[in-house]
Amino acid sequence: MLVGVPKEIKNHEYRVGMTPISVREMVRHGHKVLVQNHAGIGIGASDEDYTKAGATMIASAEEIFAKADMIVKVKEPQAGERKMLREGQILYTYLHLAPDPEQTKDLIKSGAICIAYETVTGARGGLPLLAPMSQVAGRMSIQSGAHCLEKAQGGRGILLGGVPGVAPGKVVILGGGVVGTNAAAIALGMGAEVVIIEKSTERMEELVARFGTGLRTIYSTQGAVEDECATADVVIGGVLIPGAAAPKLVTKAMLKDWKPGSVLVDVAIDQGGCAETSKATTHAEPTYVVDNVIHYCVANMPGGVANTSTYALNNVTLPHAIAIANKGWKQALTDDAHLRNGLNVCRGALTYKAVADDLGLAYTDALKAISA
Image (cartoon, rainbow, N blue to C red; front, side, top):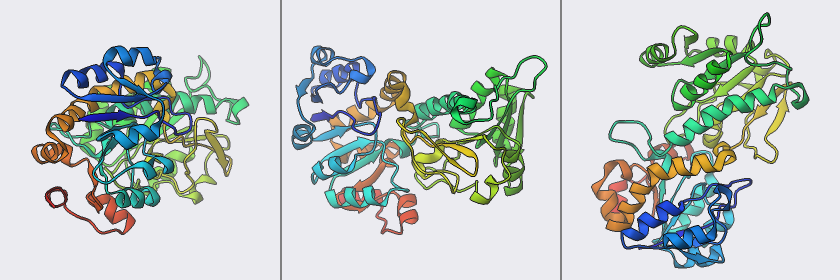
């Protein structure tokens, strides 16, 4: 199979779909890989590194999209990239379609086979292709929130860990999944007071067993969200419904009761955000203020630590990429129900029910779309 790796073009996105090590492995399986010039510069991988790994370097994304059977990316295709997709071409990347009707319609129109990292499931449960980026984003959320708390950034002038004789800052984390767990690990390590609001009592027990009684867990209700967030210095939005738009746990009305200069880091922004006031931002302009609350809503947080993120991502995306290349997309998706769960769009059909429900579009069963 001819595999194409274009350079990412989203604002301040430095990750790349395949590392030189991944390219070498793909070539070892008998496939040809086209990599756009300078695609790996953000992770310190030179064109020479890719050439040594067996890649063919290509000057333009247009040529890669025109030639490749499968496009391997990191972030969702931007409008210009979506225009280059062609019928029957495989797109393997993060998509996050539920809050993005324009992208969804473009992908349906393209006739491409679009496999989303974030909805591929694992034999042990969970979302293994999303997990490493959730780990990164959860850990980054605390350092980003701590930075925003500094007075020069418009924050309250609070040091999260405090100092002897001065109370630490309070971090409230909405959701005790991968993002929440990793955020808690960093916040507790910094010495902050940490509260996780979670609806699963079993998950709360696991969190307390891991972190001890220094972590406070509270069952998720609207009242709990209102009360805890009102006394927080940093609120982390880490809720996730696989493939679907994030629930709006934080309303605009709540913000009037929050501390002036407090910070909301909405890690759920890829799925639309968990606050009514959240809107996607970039690393170039990461924050804005609503009702004296700083909102940090960068939609590609892990891109800020591109080296770590790219290698962590490739560890989990490469095996499926090789399976698709070895078997062809039809056989690979037929053989592996977990990979099939990643199929969001297939030759004009929308094949992920949560996306179809959120956008009010027709849904087609994945197996039916594959065999059509």
